[in-house]
Length: 198
Image 1 (tube, rainbow, N blue to C red):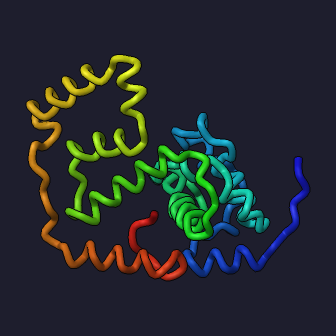
Image 2 (cartoon, rainbow, N blue to C red):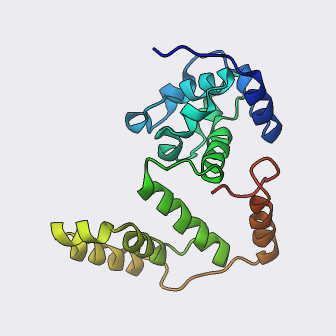
């Protein structure tokens, strides 16, 4: 295991952006044990918290874990000390992007960007357009074409739309001003933003 060097300035700066309550963590691992995505992570949620407390932010920013995390909130809900782990993960994703840290999971980043583009445009996600646009942007259509699954996926999409699971028409939110406000706050930077991450 690599040696760690405590860097209190890093944690202080991070907590000002939150507060995330990282110091309240006593490493019970309830977050890790409840997380449905640990099979794909290189750092477990409790390890992320420990590294943040120790000031090893650079190591966390380069990890796959940030991009694998779906921000479902299971970790935050299970935490007996109310550490806001899911919010911390979102903040760290934002920080990694702003600092230009290369994303180890480019397809996940593209999905996040496609999702937020939909939210910014309409205030809600139009699923019928989200997946095809993501598939085209990420190049996954090539894999679907090679494996011959594209027709089956298309038929499934049509069946879902016929059953009302997917909408044929996009819908807009009534609170356009609220959406614009959230995105303008996000653009101010991670330390000032309470808007959507990424």
